[in-house]
Length: 151
Image 1 (cartoon, rainbow, N blue to C red):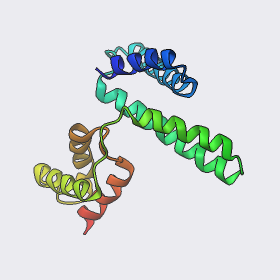
Image 2: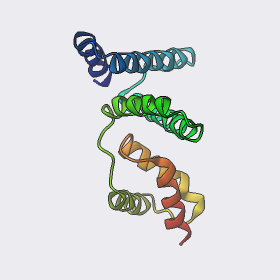
Image 3: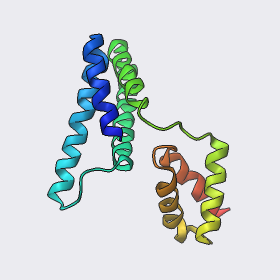
Image 4: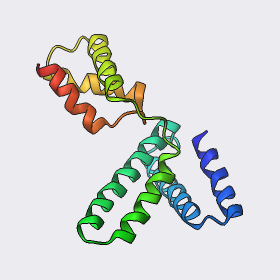
C-alpha cells in the first residue's frame, strides 16, 4: 500500500539523515492524515491508494505554482526547494502516460461510453479517472477530450 511505502521511506530518510526528503515525506503524511480526518468527518472510509494519488498530485500542482511565483519573484533558492519537494513526491506517483497514450485512452473512453458530444464529456472524464488515476494530467486531458468531442 502507498501509505506503507511512504512510512518506510520516512524511516529510511531518518537513517540516512536526508533532511529535505524527511521533511517532505512528513508533510505528505500530514496531508494524507488531514484528508483522512476530513473523510471520516463526512462518514467516508480512510483514503484508498487512488485517493492518496490524487492528494499527491494536488501537492505537486501546488508546488509547481509556487515554483512559478518564486521564479518570477527572483527567489531561486525557494524555487529550488520546491523543485526538490516535487521530485520527492513524484517518486510515489505511477509513471505518467505519454501524450499519444493519453489520446488513445481518450479515444477508447469515448468509444466505451458512446459519447457523442460535449454533454457526454463528464462520462468520458469519469472513465479516464477510474482507469488512469495518477497516470495522466486531467487538466490537459480534459482539453483533449473537449477537442475530440467537439471536432
